[in-house]
Amino acid sequence: MKRPITSALLAAALSVSLVMPAGAVSSATAVEAMQALGIIAGDSSGDLNLTSPVTRAEFVTMMTAASPYKDTVGTGSGVSLFKDVKSDHWASQYIQLAVEQGWMSGYVDGTFRPDSQITLEEACTALLKLLGYDSSSLAGAYPSAQLTKAASVGLRDDLSAAQGQTLTRQDCVMLFYNLLVSDGSDGSVYGTTLGYTVTNGEVDYSTLITADTKGPYIAQANKSLSLPFSASGATIYRNGAASSLSAVQQYDVYYYNANMRTVWVYSDRVSGTLTAISPSSAAPTSVTVAGSEYELGTSDAIYKCSSQGQFAPGDVVTLLLGMNGEVVDVVSAGSVQTVYYGVVLSSQKGASSSSTSSTGTSSVQSETQVACTDGVVRTFYTDAGPYGEGRLVAVTVDGSGTTVKSMQHRRLSGAVSKDGSSLGDYDFAAGVEILDTDGEGGYARIYPSRLAGETLREGDVVYYTLDSAGDIDRLILEEVTGDTADYVYLSGIEDNSTTGTGSIQNISMTYTYVQDGETYTLNSGRKYSVKTGGIALGYDEDGQVKSMKQLKSVELDSLTGLTAMGDGREYDISEEVQVLLRDRSSRAYYLTDLSQINAQDYDLTGWYDDLSHSAGGRIRIIVAEPQ
Image 1 (cartoon, rainbow, N blue to C red):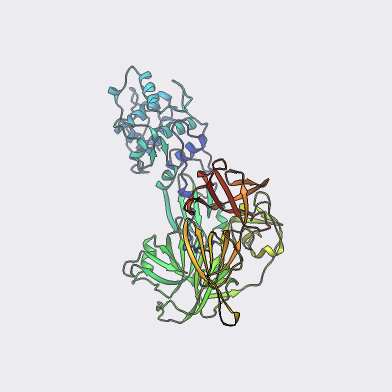
Image 2 (cartoon, rainbow, N blue to C red):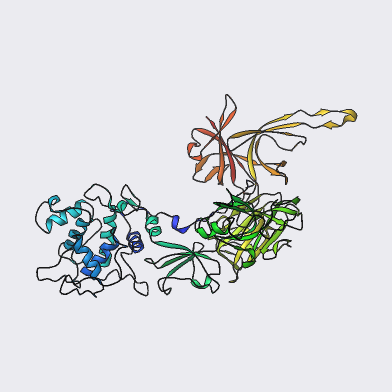
């Protein structure tokens, strides 16, 4: 849409919450949660060995990881509390902690039997003590009292093991997941006492991951990552998609979770002129680069943009962004070359950042706004220009400064696969950037699924680039989806034109329209060939209305989700559809929601664009009048 996008926000993988009701949690979710906590860990190949039995020594390490003491047990030797657990035993410190806290005890013969497989009743007895329940809260004799209490607080939910049976690692996964959502003796949900979010029997999985996720770090010149575990068999995500370490580049930002043997890598960068440091260079918290503001997220980034650092307004820099879009580090643009592709929205000569760079130089430059393929509008300052609105450009930011270069069209045609994964003979790269434009300054970032099953003609694609694997990583379209326009409902037209000397007409028109529930009035010296109803507005480079295009209308018979039926035809409804409720008495229009109307109680009129592509032709406005 024409409304400017002012910042680039990452869709961080760690922000996704996977929640399941207690007693109905999926096995996969429970496994991931326990792996994130370090309760269950894989071997060198990443195999969790879930069918293997659990020993008493292994169980106390699991308890430690699920307790407030998870970070207090060191790797050195413990003490010889039992004759079969010497101080150099791998689990001696964990066994010492479990005994000191009263979770578990040894046998009367002075042994702990660390290699014996743990039974259901032993495990439930230990976890009840971790929850704070003592003998006074139990009714009956061991082990029935312990097993009954464990069932009543939810520890045994989705657990098939019975009395006397030994537990597998899968059993322990469910047992410890249930522990997190169980009530302790003080009435508090146990997981919340460890700092995790547990609400109404649901565990927020993201808090488990972030609790033990380390970072951010920066990949160095050799593109290697410093990890506390072997990368062999590790899970790697880059920019939210499954990847490999071979894809890592210098200056990528990464995070890792050692328990999960998972690495998240991000290559999001912003290059351009640093035009503002806020609130001051003495104590900066944010910077403005390429026309957008970014929060400084690390002490290194804050220092480099401070009065003691190396960067000042006027410098051309590259921001390295983390998982939440915060600035992790700032480097000279000469350290990394960044290329943006897009279309010019506006350009004017004589603009300047009005400040002096850290090198003491300043110059009057052209200020050019470009809608880039990632959907972000960026502002670039160059010595050349200005550039024509709608021009296809490539912007290069490197050590020599910023260069805007006009590009010739690079055409492509073919069918987009039904799953939206390819175009013609090319696959779409993971995270492909697709920008639809309309030649009038309108733009919209779209996604492959929007084009699924569509056939693109040669004139539809104006430019594309390929990555190192030969996949399409950027695609610029021309008026394919109809999503680039601003759609409004024209509710009134008043013609106040007069005829002057020599029969010259003085045109004076007043157009009243409703957009997103707000009413606007436009006085114009131009008469547009439109009538009341849905229209699409076009703008000049100053943001003034320069065109009005009538939409087509259809009386709607039914609504189902994001589709509608009318005149025996099915129409797709835009996800950004404007639904207006018309008051017949006052003739006013009120914004409402699609879920609030139906064809039984309202007369519905849909207004849709008339693009020939099936990707277009969507209903943009619905007017509902009570029957």
